[in-house]
Image (cartoon, rainbow, N blue to C red; front, side, top):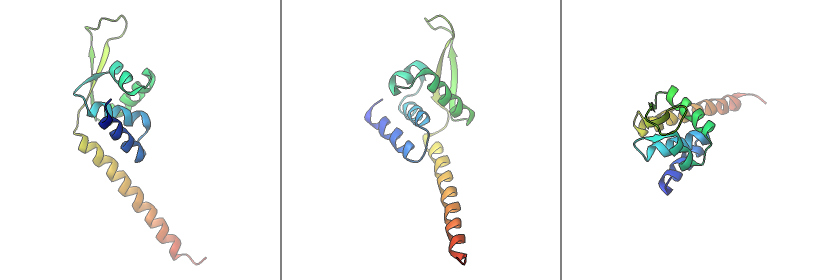
Amino acid sequence: MDDDAYEVASLLQSIDVPRIEALSLACLFTASELSSQEIEKATGLRQPEVSVAMRSLYERGWIDERDDKRTKCRGRPAKYYSLKVDFEEIINVYESRIIKMNKEKLKTVQDLLKMDV
């Protein structure tokens, strides 16, 4: 990952995106398609961490996943991942969560101010 990708990952983590998801998203943001092994190398994540992150992102409909059966390795086919939606759409989801959470906190503060303590 280059400096821009690390900055993206850092900013995502600063808004409470889990570390493995932030690193994986940042990695996919800077490439058209990557194998799970390429994501491991670029991010320093272990294979199980990449799998967990990819499963979560896939379930949200944010990434595409494909198997490459023409792998040189024995065993399972290599998995390749790419962003399915614009990165801006992903950021909009996080923005909506932050706005909702902050509105709830503000309501709690306002409720506290109304109390006779």
